[in-house]
Image 1 (cartoon, rainbow, N blue to C red):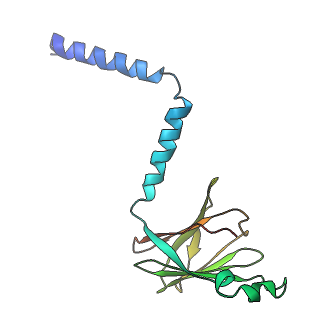
Image 2 (image 1 turned 135 degrees about the vertical axis):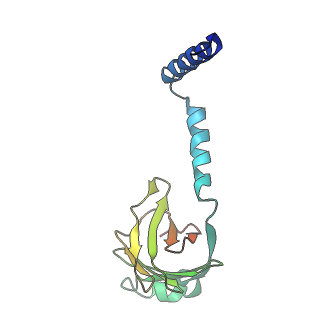
Length: 152
């Protein structure tokens, strides 16, 4: 049999639950704080640094003709390297050393759906992004890498 104290505790708990369900929606400041905290979800990811960009290394080659539209970049992280090419229709990439996994883009508007990285470490993301982006990769072994932000 329940004591009066246990009954009071249950009644108090139910009252608190009712109050929580009818609480007002959070204000703009609260939503901004929540969005800021959400960015910490990837804190365990390694950061991959841009070590090569063909537009910097070979600026004359990219200016030579409008058909020379392949931009290549290399991002290095402690666990693996990401080779990335920007083509007129999308991105092509490869992890070195090769590993299966998934890759997706992060933009100011959110993230794209992940694409599969095959046994050779290769992937394709379409369509080509036209806004600044960061590439995120996750391997089957559980390694996660985020690249620097890229302006296409």
